[in-house]
Amino acid sequence: MSETETLLEFPCQFPIKAMGKSRDDFDAIVVEIIRRHVSDIREGAVTTRPSRAGTYTSVTVVIEATSREQLDAIYQGLTDSPDVLVAL
Image 1 (cartoon, rainbow, N blue to C red):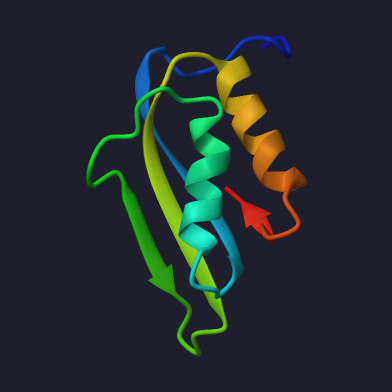
Image 2 (image 1 turned 90 degrees about the horizontal axis):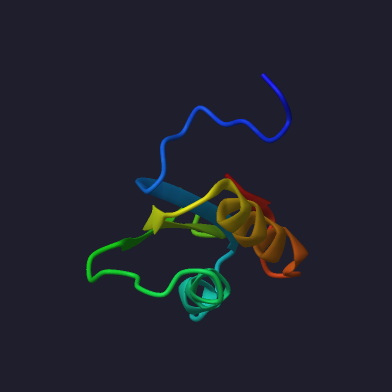
């Protein structure tokens, strides 16, 4: 499989998860980064979950992905953010 090929068929529903230190606006930071690349984030598409000790928070956003390039740009934006420790 070449570097430009993907196993995904677009458009498709795709969950993006980001983790960072817990803070009141972490979910808003993640959603703002994703909104730069996605025109519509549906109601109920964002879920948050604190770690057991509450030190970290994970945010999952389910989007309608339209291309691999779009997903690459989202992940680049998340990993460039100093607030995001991990993006999956």
